[in-house]
Image (cartoon, rainbow, N blue to C red):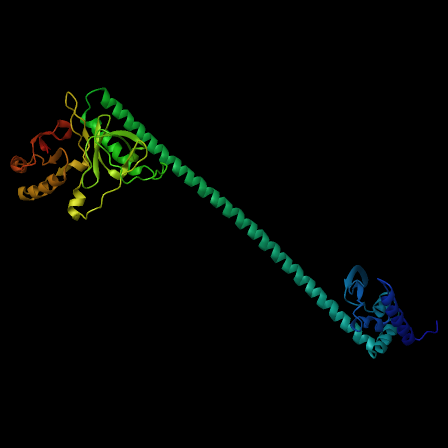
Length: 378
């Protein structure tokens, strides 16, 4: 049209600056290279272009914000079938101008943008994998916590069931004992069940009561046995210096710690100050469980705690061990000496005759060893 490209680009720059000052938004398309550099001179302007595929030589119609478009005239002319020599000659003229440098810069920017997009996609993939891993870990952690809770509940239920079963067996044996003359075997079974429940009963099953240190159980008073699930018992002996007290429930009589009982109103007795006991004496201390006397008299209960085995010992050794055992006993004791030559049995019985704490002694019942075992009353 007779317009010099230099003057045309100058006029275009002036017009765009005027529009930028008087309008909110202007979109302009151009092939002038000078206009592409306007962004770097005036911050009110921004470049944009449509992506061009160098391989297929066709636009992708993808908007590239911040990157100016570059001229692809020679590439398109070659694809359209223009004589190659003509295109090559034209390329030599373009290479001598600054436009070629601009196109190279633009191509570098596009390549950089492509690399950044690829890296962004990789980063997004890594983030997605991390999120998936986090979700999987949280799910597995929740499953493990649920499994642990289930196992704990099942264990607690199993313990409670075992304790309830043991208590039921105790109650059954006690009822049988109350109906008639108890046998030694039934009494021993009841004692073993009492000891097992007292050792295995879970702590903390009973609500905490306010401690009243002035409380002291009295003879004939009704109390609760904490180790037996709150079983009601009667105090039949005053507390001793070691904090032990004798109680009776049904036909069963036993000695328990003050800390294992409370009044029917929830009062608890303060435990006495403990004294250090010699190791051997402490090991041999026993809790004696007897059948309450009734007409006719019921047999005493034999347990592992009121039984001493002297078999294989010399008489002197047996007397020393028996002396220590009698010193800590609180009721009838069973002395296993066996038969053998009879020397150990004679020595044991001679010792019992001389001992001031022994009231009487006799052969044990056949079920408890017969003539191979001596029962001594203390």
